[in-house]
Image (tube, rainbow, N blue to C red):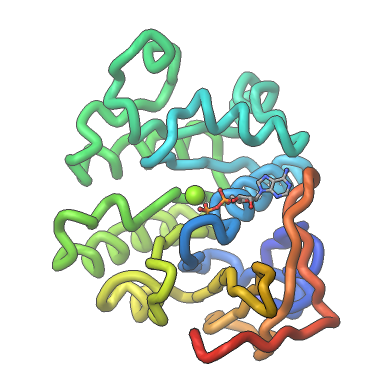
Length: 245
Ligand SMILES: Nc1ncnc2c1ncn2[C@@H]1O[C@H](COP(=O)(O)OP(=O)(O)O)[C@@H](O)[C@H]1O
Ligand SMILES: [Mg+2]
């Protein structure tokens, strides 16, 4: 029996036949506005509710803004940060600004991947993290695409080695069919793709599990919605979109 991490996201565990196999590194891929950050944050918060500590690495948004965004869904992480079971790794501010000075885990040079890995390792150890989300890995290698696969493999070695079950958020352009970067897809244990497609004059959200090592899973495209309580996947429904993806 494969050990699984229960995402707690409505419908997601069902389409994964019980959750994400433990220690898997999952590429969470999608275009802008498809719900990647929200899904990642919800995955971490649900972990906290289950007593599973987590780490959120932010490369694109100020940690202060991330806490505010999360609290708008009712996911208030401050108490968990105080209890040392949750941490945000700030790979955004480089420690610049008043607010950044209050952050506990700051990557002083976000351009230096090895420093980021060191801070990440410390944070995982400190909170005993079982779940990690990196938002986003694309930012790491946007200026050095040739490094993408190697960076993901280094992350995988650390995250999986430290027993974390992880989501690596990967940005793709609106029209792109892939999952974000040469070779990255092959390094990941799993690939979940979120999509936003115009169907009869309306944007429809859908999710598809492309790959998940260690388990069978739904092979269907499922519709989902985002509400002020987060993501809700319709596991019993399927959706057909146009020619894309
Ligand atoms: N409270 C909410 N209710 C419904 N939809 C929301 C809410 N908050 C955000 N959204 C939707 O989520 C989208 C942003 O999701 P996000 O996870 O940030 O996307 P990304 O894939 O770019 O990380 C917004 O464009 C909006 O459509
Ligand atoms: Mg995002």
